[in-house]
Length: 384
Image (cartoon, rainbow, N blue to C red):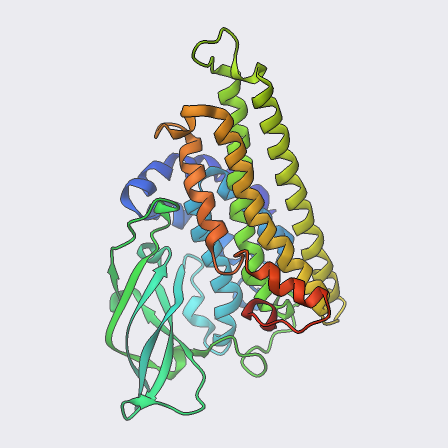
């Protein structure tokens, strides 16, 4: 990838925005949007060059996702899943890179359930059903976290494995009936007694021998990587919501009034507060992520304090994004409840980001433990 990926993402905003209603209606990202993002190399911005990726720094990844989220949160969610998949999962298949050689390849996966992978000659016999397989309709491969079984029982001391299944061998259970991020197509995926050869199996988040890359992005703490890209979605949705509000306030004359909404102190205070909350949170994220990145590039291991501050920044930014949208939606009045208003969808979508386990508010407590000199108890700060 030679072009600036953020500029490329912005060039796709019109296409993404025009497809957003279809995505919302069909509960899936339209195929041509996924293909356009794949052609532009956006799914692979965070992957090492050895995996056909752009190997871009975390700040760029956030900005790319943010740009797409300004046009549609659901499309950005699909992009985020792809960036994490190519940036993390494919490292476990470094000896089978031909699986992802086609630049149009799209991945989806899930760790929200555990499949059963029975040991057989040459591989495994896989059965399972996984939730939240965002973008599954447009994916060529699905990876599901699974427990290895032998003779019908879990195999002792065997870590969970990612099982890679081609599109022809997994079924999509269309049950994504939700309010926020409806267009992400995060349906269930089901697999029934499918043979998975050893070449299509990777150990879950295993450091060491399976990850033989020296690119700084590979050495970035994995828990932190799972947090910062979610933030890009929230920031982009909130940025768009504030811009939407400015347009609404400029033209709307509230009932029983002769002046526009923008002339009301309530609207002025709301847009100012939303800008302050959003920009402050974004700056903190970029600062905290940048500090960890500088350590990694220098060949050092980020400190527990640095990782804790990064998690604080990400969890707070998810909350800040929702708060910024709430501020302008409230000031917009009943307009924000109109299905034709962009604020109505933004308000639904941004809440989902805040609810995600990687940036959920309870991580603030665990990060606070670290700042007070205690050991972390949660997965996000324990996963290195």
